[in-house]
Image 1 (tube, rainbow, N blue to C red):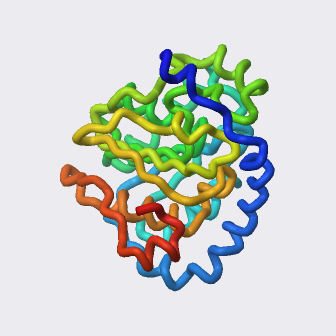
Image 2 (cartoon, one colour):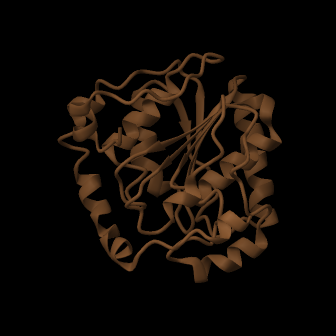
Length: 247
């Protein structure tokens, strides 16, 4: 916890540059030929959780992309993600169990920002029912290490453990960006291990869920055969430059 306390907030300059998320969304169109080459999945179910103050509309592009890759993709259907109170956490657990029973297969969980903390807690609660966890710019180590920290403090007081970086019993990938203007990138780093990795991308915080490079990393992670997870292998230099993925 002492290390988490030393994590600095993103600079005001990076926060001001978060408007580039619209450019990252617009980049989806010229990136379509590359996205069409992303690996297809095996049809297993995927649950996508939105960030703080967002709802399922914010993850529409990500869910549409994954459906095109062959997955059974679901939003959380709990409205706007206002706070991790008891009612929200109970409803999310109920939603998870319903999807697990419907598909009869393990779910992969993708969580954006605060949604990633939900995803990791679901994995701790239902380890035998989760295939893998992917978090996008989630403040795992210090939830208050964000440019919106003064608003987030009330959320933090109402949630469970503030540090979600401890290893999970299932594969997990944490995607982070050093140019994140909302969440301190160091707070997104989980403890690495045989089933845990951190992957750097070049994206804004608000564009993480639709950045073309991020989508391709997610597709690569989800396409791995169940029980045969391996750490992410970055593509060649030309692809990294085109996709905005760090090498």
